[in-house]
Length: 76
Ligand code: FES
Figure 1 (tube, rainbow, N blue to C red):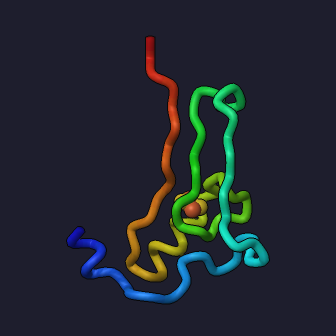
Figure 2: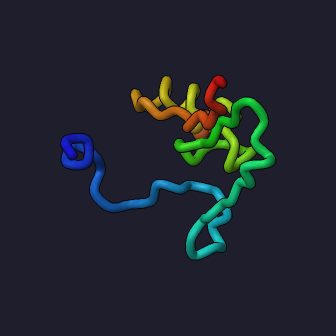
C-alpha cells in the first residue's frame, strides 16, 4: 500500500492502447501458452498484451520500474 500512497493520484495509465474501448480486457487461452509468456504491465507495448521490451526505454526515461508478468509452466 505504500507504493499506492507514493504513486500519482488520478490521470491515465494507458496512453495508447485501444483507447476507444471502455475497458481493456484480454484473454489468453491456457492452451496457447508455450513454455513462457510475457505480459505487458507498462502499457507501452506495441504488441499488447504481450511485452515487447518497451518498458526498458520507459524506465530509463522516467525512473520507473515497470516490467512484465511472466507466465511460465511449473517444471515437473
Ligand atoms: Fe510493457 Fe514490457 S513492454 S512490460
